[in-house]
Image (cartoon, rainbow, N blue to C red):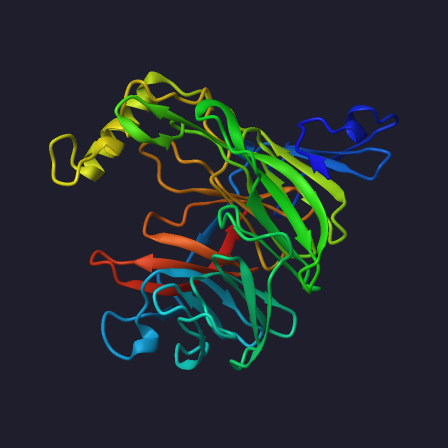
Length: 409
């Protein structure tokens, strides 16, 4: 097991490091700029870049090339609580619908093909369907919450088996972990012991690798979650404003982890060995009183303010001057690995900012900035497509796919 450390022993004590400047050219960084790769004697690469020195942007088309979901009509096209979506090898789209507890597969034309799962506790059924991974051969691994298990299906809807990870009952869901191509899974749970509730120590996550049958392979890391504490007049726990929490993602043969406290992601290979550390410039993260005031004003605007219907002690705690405030903004609020191996990080949005992402190639070099717009929630990134959740102004949910292109600037 390793613990996240900004300067691991293998790098801190390494001698004879090789430093390679990766020249900017073509669709790389701007002319005159470079990223730097440092390789130590243990074979661990450190790749550092400055995203703000390049104008490379990714963008989606004006209209989706596929939209699945209707306000009314046939049941398979009505969604409520879309929790995941993934593209299959023939272009079909699999969607996890939380309300029906189903995994629904749609052709690339949008026509419904098959539904699997459903509400229940029997083979192939879900107590609460969450998350989805597509393995080679279009095998679908869908997560079932409380206790955590995977229901495994073929793309044509046939239930294959269930897998319940050993010594593991409560999945955190965020960060989600993932399933690798060989069927090994990376699962994230809260460490025992908890917190004293005094904002002093974070609730920790354990990142555990399981084999395809659910046996424990290794505990990969202990990562910090959020600090919790109590405030006068409120019986529950709150977290400091702008508090960071670790993120974990896994796909294909890659595991990515970040504490979101520093601009750094650690990359493990399919054998769970640390192979690469990706770092980037992320200036101006200091939290000011202006940020705090803007966050309070935004919260009141969304919830109605003191004295409005539904306002509670929990709402008072959220905007209380006694609530601690983090010294620095987190570096990320979401982490995803694209189907092409690119690493996508959702930047932690400051008050008033729209959602934005930064992407890195599999080798760690910076790839692009991306702003999907406030109405889209990315579900899967492909080499040239984005799958996303769209909610309209009356709450109708649709799974949409856009062409995704890159402009090097």
